[in-house]
Length: 196
Figure 1 (cartoon, rainbow, N blue to C red):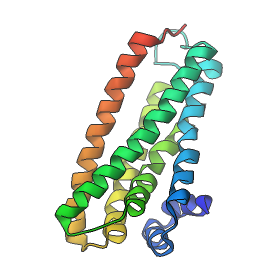
Figure 2 (figure 1 turned 90 degrees about the vertical axis):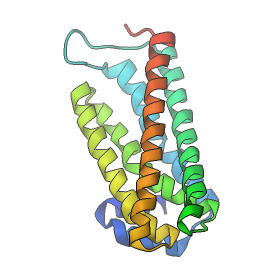
Figure 3 (figure 1 turned 120 degrees about the horizontal axis):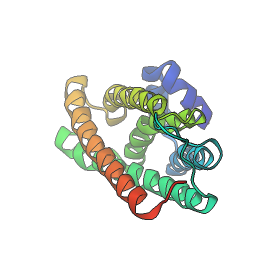
């Protein structure tokens, strides 16, 4: 069950990675996890932008119209799902250089469960202060990288020494993908949205 893995990656990550690998659920199960967990930042961005308003530290709170916030939330949802599939491809493609031959489900599991803390950090939008959200997002990013380093040797079935280098390669590619997404979001924000 998705919620069992959700709790497990926080409470006992190494054992949970072993559980995920031993069960080796279907592609459908991993997809349902992604579709469910990516709703959190999308829905929270809509609620915080329309109902709570964002504070950037100075001045009044920033709100968006319902139509623009809906477009933003749908865009966030689609970009996050696309990002997971891009990570899955990178995980799968780079595995060959480290003498691993995962199937697409294993690659998707590693990408999806590694990114889960980042998606869960969307709950921080209940308190839409930029500084607070930034701190929570950085903590989530750090924990996601930790999950990647712990889970890579288990899911990819490679020794821990090689897993470290493999996870470092994936983390670097993931951070580049994250920065590119953030740049795209800033461009989209300035071009398409007009906060009030």
